[in-house]
Length: 234
Image 1 (tube, one colour):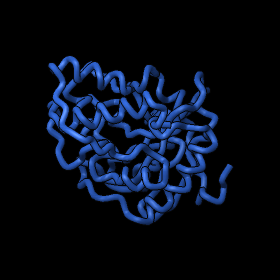
Image 2 (cartoon, rainbow, N blue to C red; image 1 turned 90 degrees about the vertical axis):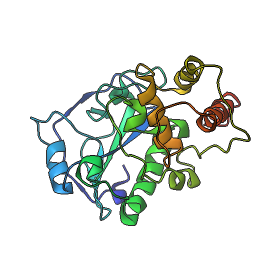
Image 3 (spheres, rainbow, N blue to C red; image 1 turned 180 degrees about the vertical axis):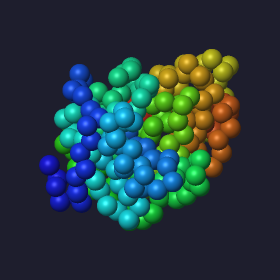
């Protein structure tokens, strides 16, 4: 299973059996001070967390859980009607200290290792580009990762994620409730509406994260929904 893309294995005991087919991929950052510390936690039975892969900043790819097993990476989460995201997803952790320990850009070596691994997984499981998401997308009230410095446009250029939409005009919804319903229709959990907006902004407009609806993100959301309805968001 693409062993040429995996540097080594360090198998975690933290998994169980899937109850859903794989239809999505969730990207995380580790949010710990070092990669060694993060990897140790992901294989510690007491921690009860794991992912399928961790990619260190030097590009070292470590397999932690076989893809046919349910890794414990997403926690309480939701995406497009699925509340057991762990059962339906592959989880990849990218070593990065995160917002708590000195958030920084993801190194080129790390992204160069991610691209072929992600391409192989997407192809193997036939995952739609719209279902390649960040942890903040599936758990907006709890998580910020992989964050506003993650290079989503790079993934889009390789057809591994949706590109940032280019709206032709600003679009203000009649009221906030209408915007939240549209956000839910795209896939987000809107139980904390402003957190869902911040997650949307981190993904689609990372230079401005305000948590309030405005004409620019309204137009972007409209374009994404239009593309999906036209079958262009595969």
